[in-house]
Amino acid sequence: MGLVDADTFLIRYCQISDNDQIDGGSSTARIETFDGGRLRLIESFKWDSQDGSGENIFQEMAESTPRAAGYAKSCEIFVEPS
Image (cartoon, rainbow, N blue to C red):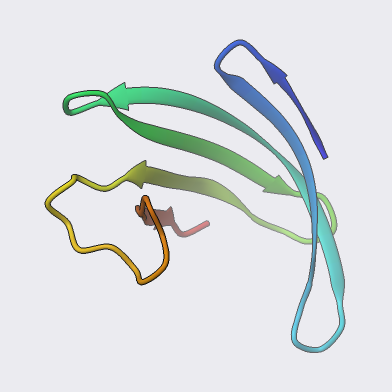
């Protein structure tokens, strides 16, 4: 669930772990363009139900990068450990 304000997303999330634990938190993400107009989403998150916070970076891959089967566009993901 979230809101969009210009180029910023405000997000609330929940996840279920392998042992059926439900955890949740919030994040703020912004969209940037780089390298010839490709898109990059930078997300800063903080858990509410457990300790931890961090940053994830999702960016559109270059046209010359092989794509996953069945996907028109691909992205690469960088995760900053909390």
